[in-house]
Length: 213
Image 1 (cartoon, rainbow, N blue to C red):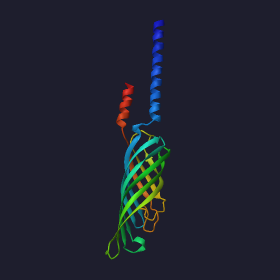
Image 2: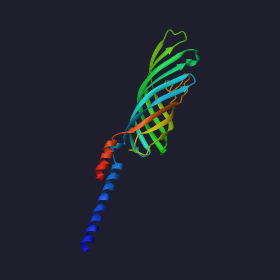
Image 3: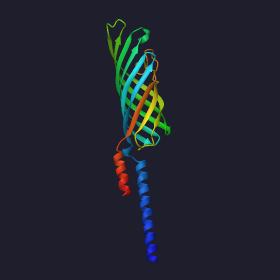
Image 4: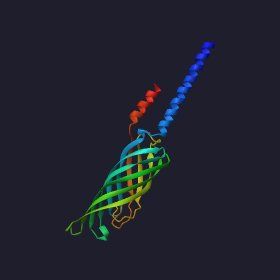
């Protein structure tokens, strides 16, 4: 009986030590750098205001710093078209915009987030007057500061699965060359619908299965 009791006691102590060690290792992984917290994805953009139309795409690459904070970089391309530009009937302005920048997202609750994004874009414009000739072309660049917020579905903290989101951003930089303003210099709402996809989730599952074994 003593031998059985001693064996049970030894097994319990060893199991407790192993469990504590595993819990400590998992906690260290969560606190430290973890490649499973990298993510990719992107958005498609659609904007409209009076005689303004904008469409584009923006792939992203980022890292979930905490369960409530994401940060990353974005590369974008946008096409926009303005009709009756500067109040001139049937005048048109078309432009192609490409650039990039950085962003942060704050999640005060699981399904809502606030976003701030800094960009620098290069602009190629084509002005088409009512007479259709001559057509003027111009080049410019501009910085933008976008702020706004959105709704997300399926986000469960960093390292979780892929999820969808929808956001509305406004450029508050007051830059006259901003691609996110209309022909009168007014900021137009930028509606983004996108997908965020965590990376290296296969490695996470492999580690979990290995630890379980």
